[in-house]
Image (cartoon, rainbow, N blue to C red):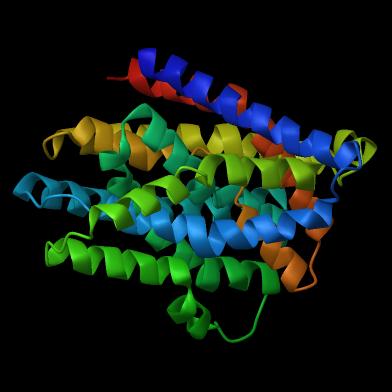
Length: 310
Protein backbone atom coordinates (compact mmCIF):
# COMPACT_ATOMS: atom_id res chain seq x y z
CA UNK A 1 0.00 0.00 0.00
CA UNK A 2 2.96 2.31 0.62
CA UNK A 3 3.82 2.36 -3.08
CA UNK A 4 0.22 3.30 -3.91
CA UNK A 5 0.47 6.35 -1.60
CA UNK A 6 3.84 7.35 -3.08
CA UNK A 7 2.36 6.99 -6.57
CA UNK A 8 -0.65 9.11 -5.61
CA UNK A 9 1.65 11.86 -4.33
CA UNK A 10 3.77 11.86 -7.50
CA UNK A 11 0.71 11.92 -9.77
CA UNK A 12 -0.78 14.80 -7.77
CA UNK A 13 2.48 16.72 -8.27
CA UNK A 14 2.30 16.17 -12.02
CA UNK A 15 -1.42 17.02 -12.07
CA UNK A 16 -0.67 20.38 -10.46
CA UNK A 17 1.66 21.06 -13.38
CA UNK A 18 -1.23 20.19 -15.73
CA UNK A 19 -3.26 22.88 -13.97
CA UNK A 20 -0.43 25.37 -14.48
CA UNK A 21 -0.48 24.68 -18.22
CA UNK A 22 -4.27 25.03 -18.19
CA UNK A 23 -4.04 28.36 -16.34
CA UNK A 24 -1.42 29.74 -18.75
CA UNK A 25 -3.83 29.30 -21.65
CA UNK A 26 -6.98 30.40 -19.83
CA UNK A 27 -5.23 33.58 -18.64
CA UNK A 28 -4.28 34.24 -22.30
CA UNK A 29 -0.57 34.36 -21.48
CA UNK A 30 -0.15 31.51 -23.98
CA UNK A 31 -2.29 29.73 -26.56
CA UNK A 32 -2.88 25.99 -26.88
CA UNK A 33 -0.90 25.96 -30.12
CA UNK A 34 2.13 27.14 -28.14
CA UNK A 35 2.34 23.61 -26.75
CA UNK A 36 3.77 22.47 -30.10
CA UNK A 37 7.36 23.68 -29.41
CA UNK A 38 7.26 22.01 -26.01
CA UNK A 39 6.11 18.78 -27.68
CA UNK A 40 9.01 19.00 -30.13
CA UNK A 41 11.47 19.55 -27.28
CA UNK A 42 9.99 16.62 -25.39
CA UNK A 43 10.11 14.29 -28.39
CA UNK A 44 13.45 15.25 -29.91
CA UNK A 45 15.50 16.30 -26.88
CA UNK A 46 14.17 15.26 -23.48
CA UNK A 47 12.97 11.71 -24.22
CA UNK A 48 16.15 10.66 -26.10
CA UNK A 49 18.26 12.08 -23.25
CA UNK A 50 16.37 9.94 -20.73
CA UNK A 51 16.73 6.83 -22.89
CA UNK A 52 20.49 7.14 -23.39
CA UNK A 53 21.10 8.03 -19.73
CA UNK A 54 19.08 4.99 -18.63
CA UNK A 55 21.54 2.62 -20.31
CA UNK A 56 24.60 4.17 -18.63
CA UNK A 57 24.77 1.47 -15.98
CA UNK A 58 27.08 -1.44 -15.25
CA UNK A 59 26.28 -4.83 -16.79
CA UNK A 60 25.33 -7.72 -14.52
CA UNK A 61 23.75 -11.09 -15.36
CA UNK A 62 20.81 -10.15 -13.13
CA UNK A 63 20.26 -6.95 -15.13
CA UNK A 64 20.18 -8.88 -18.41
CA UNK A 65 17.65 -11.34 -16.99
CA UNK A 66 15.55 -8.41 -15.82
CA UNK A 67 15.64 -6.82 -19.26
CA UNK A 68 14.57 -10.08 -20.91
CA UNK A 69 11.67 -10.34 -18.45
CA UNK A 70 10.69 -6.72 -19.13
CA UNK A 71 10.83 -7.22 -22.90
CA UNK A 72 8.88 -10.48 -22.71
CA UNK A 73 6.20 -8.84 -20.56
CA UNK A 74 5.99 -5.89 -22.96
CA UNK A 75 5.29 -8.16 -25.93
CA UNK A 76 2.89 -10.38 -23.98
CA UNK A 77 0.92 -7.46 -22.48
CA UNK A 78 0.55 -5.81 -25.89
CA UNK A 79 -0.81 -9.06 -27.33
CA UNK A 80 -3.42 -9.06 -24.56
CA UNK A 81 -4.16 -5.36 -25.14
CA UNK A 82 -4.70 -5.86 -28.87
CA UNK A 83 -6.95 -8.86 -28.19
CA UNK A 84 -8.98 -6.89 -25.64
CA UNK A 85 -9.24 -4.08 -28.18
CA UNK A 86 -10.80 -6.37 -30.77
CA UNK A 87 -13.34 -7.68 -28.25
CA UNK A 88 -14.25 -4.21 -26.96
CA UNK A 89 -14.58 -2.81 -30.48
CA UNK A 90 -17.08 -5.50 -31.47
CA UNK A 91 -19.11 -5.54 -28.26
CA UNK A 92 -19.20 -1.78 -27.59
CA UNK A 93 -19.13 -0.55 -31.21
CA UNK A 94 -16.02 1.56 -30.65
CA UNK A 95 -15.00 3.91 -33.44
CA UNK A 96 -11.30 4.02 -34.49
CA UNK A 97 -10.36 6.82 -32.05
CA UNK A 98 -12.14 5.12 -29.15
CA UNK A 99 -10.58 1.78 -30.08
CA UNK A 100 -7.02 3.14 -30.20
CA UNK A 101 -7.37 5.29 -27.07
CA UNK A 102 -8.76 2.43 -25.00
CA UNK A 103 -5.74 0.17 -25.50
CA UNK A 104 -2.73 2.47 -25.99
CA UNK A 105 -1.38 4.23 -22.91
CA UNK A 106 0.72 7.33 -22.38
CA UNK A 107 3.55 5.17 -21.08
CA UNK A 108 6.53 7.27 -22.18
CA UNK A 109 5.49 10.70 -20.96
CA UNK A 110 4.09 9.59 -17.62
CA UNK A 111 5.75 6.32 -16.62
CA UNK A 112 9.38 7.40 -16.94
CA UNK A 113 9.06 10.32 -14.47
CA UNK A 114 7.02 8.12 -12.11
CA UNK A 115 9.61 5.33 -12.22
CA UNK A 116 12.42 7.84 -11.67
CA UNK A 117 10.62 9.31 -8.67
CA UNK A 118 9.39 6.08 -7.09
CA UNK A 119 12.25 3.65 -7.69
CA UNK A 120 15.25 5.68 -8.93
CA UNK A 121 17.00 6.34 -12.26
CA UNK A 122 18.53 2.85 -12.38
CA UNK A 123 15.06 1.35 -12.91
CA UNK A 124 14.15 3.48 -15.95
CA UNK A 125 15.94 1.00 -18.22
CA UNK A 126 13.18 -1.55 -17.54
CA UNK A 127 10.52 0.91 -18.70
CA UNK A 128 12.28 1.36 -22.07
CA UNK A 129 11.38 -2.19 -23.16
CA UNK A 130 7.66 -1.43 -22.96
CA UNK A 131 8.18 1.90 -24.72
CA UNK A 132 10.11 0.46 -27.67
CA UNK A 133 7.48 -2.25 -28.26
CA UNK A 134 4.71 0.33 -27.99
CA UNK A 135 6.48 2.77 -30.31
CA UNK A 136 6.71 0.07 -33.00
CA UNK A 137 3.01 -0.71 -32.59
CA UNK A 138 2.08 2.99 -32.67
CA UNK A 139 3.30 3.22 -36.27
CA UNK A 140 1.90 -0.13 -37.35
CA UNK A 141 -1.16 -1.40 -35.49
CA UNK A 142 -2.34 1.91 -33.99
CA UNK A 143 -1.97 3.75 -37.28
CA UNK A 144 -3.93 1.05 -39.10
CA UNK A 145 -6.76 1.43 -36.56
CA UNK A 146 -6.96 5.20 -36.98
CA UNK A 147 -6.42 5.37 -40.74
CA UNK A 148 -8.29 2.18 -41.63
CA UNK A 149 -6.05 1.26 -44.54
CA UNK A 150 -2.89 2.19 -46.38
CA UNK A 151 0.71 1.10 -46.33
CA UNK A 152 2.42 1.00 -42.97
CA UNK A 153 5.08 3.75 -42.94
CA UNK A 154 8.01 1.65 -41.73
CA UNK A 155 10.31 4.56 -42.56
CA UNK A 156 8.69 6.45 -39.69
CA UNK A 157 9.82 3.69 -37.33
CA UNK A 158 13.35 3.71 -38.74
CA UNK A 159 13.57 7.50 -38.48
CA UNK A 160 12.04 7.72 -34.99
CA UNK A 161 14.61 9.43 -32.79
CA UNK A 162 13.38 7.63 -29.69
CA UNK A 163 14.03 4.25 -31.33
CA UNK A 164 17.50 5.45 -32.30
CA UNK A 165 18.20 6.72 -28.78
CA UNK A 166 17.32 3.27 -27.42
CA UNK A 167 19.56 1.61 -30.03
CA UNK A 168 22.45 3.94 -29.19
CA UNK A 169 21.90 3.49 -25.46
CA UNK A 170 21.70 -0.30 -25.84
CA UNK A 171 24.94 -0.38 -27.87
CA UNK A 172 26.73 1.72 -25.27
CA UNK A 173 25.43 -0.65 -22.59
CA UNK A 174 26.38 -3.80 -24.53
CA UNK A 175 29.90 -2.52 -25.14
CA UNK A 176 30.02 -1.01 -21.63
CA UNK A 177 31.10 2.35 -23.04
CA UNK A 178 30.73 5.05 -20.40
CA UNK A 179 30.11 8.61 -21.52
CA UNK A 180 32.10 11.42 -19.86
CA UNK A 181 30.57 12.67 -16.59
CA UNK A 182 29.86 16.07 -18.13
CA UNK A 183 27.73 14.37 -20.84
CA UNK A 184 25.83 12.12 -18.43
CA UNK A 185 25.29 15.13 -16.17
CA UNK A 186 23.82 17.07 -19.10
CA UNK A 187 21.61 14.12 -20.08
CA UNK A 188 20.38 13.80 -16.52
CA UNK A 189 19.61 17.51 -16.25
CA UNK A 190 17.68 17.53 -19.54
CA UNK A 191 15.90 14.28 -18.71
CA UNK A 192 14.59 15.67 -15.43
CA UNK A 193 12.21 17.86 -17.47
CA UNK A 194 10.31 14.90 -18.97
CA UNK A 195 7.48 14.92 -16.44
CA UNK A 196 6.90 18.68 -16.08
CA UNK A 197 7.19 19.26 -19.84
CA UNK A 198 4.65 16.55 -20.72
CA UNK A 199 2.19 17.75 -18.09
CA UNK A 200 2.44 21.39 -19.20
CA UNK A 201 1.61 20.28 -22.75
CA UNK A 202 -1.33 18.24 -21.45
CA UNK A 203 -2.72 21.21 -19.52
CA UNK A 204 -2.37 23.55 -22.49
CA UNK A 205 -4.20 21.09 -24.77
CA UNK A 206 -6.97 20.48 -22.25
CA UNK A 207 -7.56 24.24 -21.99
CA UNK A 208 -8.60 24.34 -25.65
CA UNK A 209 -11.43 21.83 -25.14
CA UNK A 210 -14.86 23.32 -24.25
CA UNK A 211 -15.93 22.02 -20.83
CA UNK A 212 -19.50 21.56 -22.09
CA UNK A 213 -18.28 19.22 -24.83
CA UNK A 214 -16.45 17.08 -22.31
CA UNK A 215 -19.33 16.86 -19.83
CA UNK A 216 -21.89 15.99 -22.50
CA UNK A 217 -19.89 13.19 -24.18
CA UNK A 218 -20.91 9.82 -22.73
CA UNK A 219 -18.60 8.00 -25.14
CA UNK A 220 -15.58 9.83 -23.73
CA UNK A 221 -16.39 8.50 -20.27
CA UNK A 222 -16.95 5.02 -21.65
CA UNK A 223 -13.45 5.01 -23.13
CA UNK A 224 -12.09 6.56 -19.92
CA UNK A 225 -13.59 3.66 -17.94
CA UNK A 226 -12.08 1.15 -20.36
CA UNK A 227 -8.61 2.76 -20.39
CA UNK A 228 -8.29 3.48 -16.67
CA UNK A 229 -10.27 0.69 -15.00
CA UNK A 230 -11.47 -2.21 -17.16
CA UNK A 231 -8.27 -2.84 -19.13
CA UNK A 232 -5.94 -2.42 -16.09
CA UNK A 233 -8.03 -4.83 -13.98
CA UNK A 234 -7.95 -7.42 -16.79
CA UNK A 235 -4.17 -7.08 -17.10
CA UNK A 236 -3.75 -7.18 -13.32
CA UNK A 237 -5.18 -10.70 -13.22
CA UNK A 238 -3.07 -11.71 -16.22
CA UNK A 239 0.15 -10.49 -14.57
CA UNK A 240 -0.66 -12.12 -11.24
CA UNK A 241 -1.68 -15.44 -12.78
CA UNK A 242 1.50 -15.39 -14.90
CA UNK A 243 3.63 -15.04 -11.77
CA UNK A 244 6.16 -12.79 -13.56
CA UNK A 245 7.30 -11.26 -10.27
CA UNK A 246 8.95 -14.55 -9.29
CA UNK A 247 10.83 -15.23 -12.51
CA UNK A 248 14.00 -13.22 -11.78
CA UNK A 249 15.72 -11.33 -9.00
CA UNK A 250 13.92 -8.02 -8.35
CA UNK A 251 11.09 -9.44 -10.46
CA UNK A 252 8.45 -7.79 -8.24
CA UNK A 253 9.65 -4.28 -9.11
CA UNK A 254 10.22 -5.09 -12.79
CA UNK A 255 6.75 -6.61 -13.13
CA UNK A 256 5.18 -3.61 -11.40
CA UNK A 257 6.97 -1.19 -13.76
CA UNK A 258 5.67 -3.13 -16.77
CA UNK A 259 2.16 -3.20 -15.32
CA UNK A 260 2.35 0.50 -14.40
CA UNK A 261 2.95 1.33 -18.07
CA UNK A 262 -0.40 -0.24 -19.02
CA UNK A 263 -2.62 1.67 -16.56
CA UNK A 264 -1.69 5.23 -17.50
CA UNK A 265 -3.97 7.65 -19.44
CA UNK A 266 -4.71 7.43 -23.15
CA UNK A 267 -1.66 7.93 -25.35
CA UNK A 268 -0.89 11.44 -26.53
CA UNK A 269 0.25 9.83 -29.78
CA UNK A 270 -3.36 8.89 -30.60
CA UNK A 271 -4.29 12.58 -30.48
CA UNK A 272 -1.28 13.53 -32.60
CA UNK A 273 -2.10 10.87 -35.21
CA UNK A 274 -5.75 11.93 -35.33
CA UNK A 275 -4.62 15.49 -36.01
CA UNK A 276 -2.04 14.53 -38.65
CA UNK A 277 -4.32 12.14 -40.54
CA UNK A 278 -7.44 14.32 -40.40
CA UNK A 279 -9.49 12.12 -38.08
CA UNK A 280 -11.57 13.13 -35.03
CA UNK A 281 -8.81 15.03 -33.20
CA UNK A 282 -11.26 16.80 -30.88
CA UNK A 283 -12.59 13.52 -29.48
CA UNK A 284 -9.03 12.21 -29.14
CA UNK A 285 -8.08 15.37 -27.24
CA UNK A 286 -11.09 15.03 -24.92
CA UNK A 287 -10.23 11.41 -24.12
CA UNK A 288 -6.60 12.35 -23.56
CA UNK A 289 -7.58 15.22 -21.28
CA UNK A 290 -10.18 13.38 -19.21
CA UNK A 291 -8.02 10.27 -18.71
CA UNK A 292 -5.03 12.46 -17.76
CA UNK A 293 -7.04 14.31 -15.11
CA UNK A 294 -8.76 11.22 -13.66
CA UNK A 295 -5.68 9.00 -13.52
CA UNK A 296 -4.72 10.76 -10.30
CA UNK A 297 -7.48 8.70 -8.67
CA UNK A 298 -7.44 5.48 -10.69
CA UNK A 299 -3.72 4.68 -10.90
CA UNK A 300 -3.09 4.58 -7.12
CA UNK A 301 -6.27 2.52 -6.64
CA UNK A 302 -5.22 0.01 -9.30
CA UNK A 303 -1.71 -0.28 -7.80
CA UNK A 304 -3.21 -0.74 -4.32
CA UNK A 305 -5.38 -3.55 -5.72
CA UNK A 306 -2.28 -4.99 -7.44
CA UNK A 307 -0.45 -5.12 -4.11
CA UNK A 308 -3.38 -6.78 -2.34
CA UNK A 309 -2.81 -9.86 -4.51
CA UNK A 310 0.83 -10.25 -3.42
